[in-house]
Length: 142
Length: 87
Image (cartoon, rainbow over all chains, first blue to last red; front, side):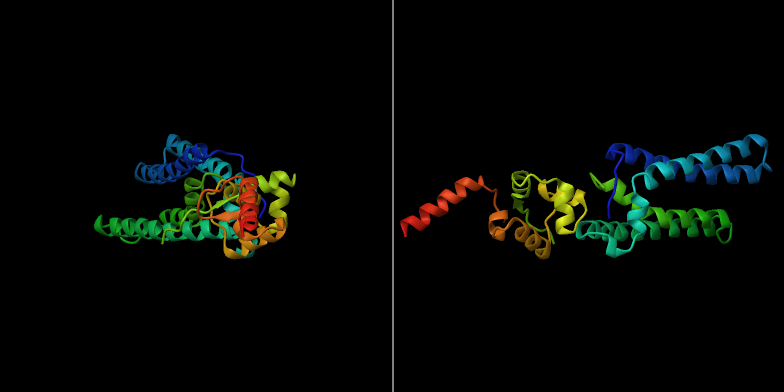
């Protein structure tokens, strides 16, 4: 698979952190908005954090081809890339399991019942981006 | 299992043949970044890939890859000649 890497490792790490912080921000602002019945300021903040999420996603996953690498068929990867992807899938599986367990049990202990659709959407996003994020975080050159 | 570090002469041989990483990558069927990883000795190739590389350079696999740091190729050829001459 041919790739163009336009970002060094330090920048990649920074944008991965920004990307996941924006998800946390979206969730925090969403629950604040729900609690205070959506004042305009909260809606603006929610929109801003959503834009930040999309911007950082494009910057760190699309432009660096990490997304393509983690979502392409095995046939399009060479042996090193395949090894890198398998390793990242192993770590992301463990990390995702812990994240889901913490959230599900957190909701249950807090008496909030089952997780809502916003949390589920965030988990879906994390499940899809975590392998690519681990590759971006760990690899010197993609 | 932690594998041993493999030393290689890919960078020297590639430069000697005056081809780019991209060209070599296309010939041996890997991503050009993988050639960089191989040249920096940060990735140990599979046996199949090692054979592909040795076939392309037309050299025995043990002249390209080694588990010990490699001497310049000319020194090794002189040593080999001396060995043959001494027999």
